[in-house]
Amino acid sequence: MNELFLNQAELLAALDAVSARALVSISREKLFPTDIDERRTVLERGTESLKQRGMLRVDTDNKAVLDAQLATIISTMAFPRIAIAVVTNDQQAGLRLLWFYQARDHIIEHGLTRQRQHHITEVPDVSALIARIQAFLAVKPASNVVSGAGPEASLEMEQEVFFTVKRLAEQHELERAKELLLNCGFAAGDANALLQVLEQPLAAGNIAILRCAPESETIVDGRNLALLQDGRAAWSARQKVPGEPVLVVETTAATAIKEQLRAYLEELAQV
Image 1 (cartoon, rainbow, N blue to C red):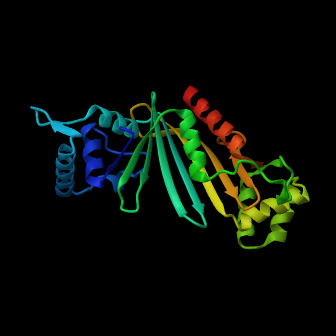
Image 2 (cartoon, one colour; image 1 turned 30 degrees about the vertical axis):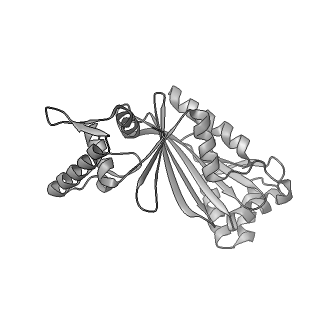
Image 3 (cartoon, one colour; image 1 turned 60 degrees about the vertical axis):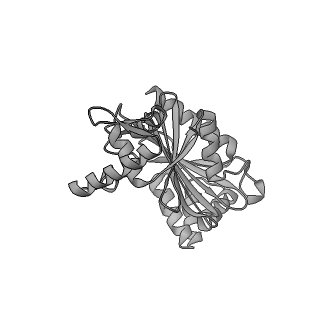
């Protein structure tokens, strides 16, 4: 089973069958109906639908039992070791969100279609996972020096200063924003290039890699990488040390993003 679509009732019935009550990607309040009667009705509808599709059976104790492949998929989603949220907002496709879950040797991709169907796909390995994230974000293959920034512009700055610069750029107060960047040590060309992408990004993305407690959706650690792109270059921002408000802001490209994602995954897996 490489790919499947589940409606909301089917997903809830599948989660209930593995005794899961939450997903990292969906708040507990939005997942299961709080009204007992409504919850029972939804679960019965989802159970019957999965039975008809051959994905679920009811044993002699009247307990729902998922097909082995579906049970593995749903358990990976409900009890991941690593969960990854990828958000992108570009001028053509608008705001989009994908979730990935990793547990043991299994990796699952989870998205929602326009018809509110849960689109669930098995990902074969970490390399394919990283490639999928890069494709979803449409990360540029290489930074373009025509942007005016140096080929490897990189600087550290206080997180709050970066957010202030970003806000000023979005409000088109470029001189004030540039002064802050120059005070942080940015060269004039690098400052201009960064402000250009902050003011009018063609695409903005964010990757949150989260480590979850065993057999739980509870998040215990995480890493975050922000991405901004325009027609000329791509920039990333990440905390220099996890949990400390100092960012590394630098030009980037697909290869660098790939290396950073792999490093984060390995780091969180070893904790």
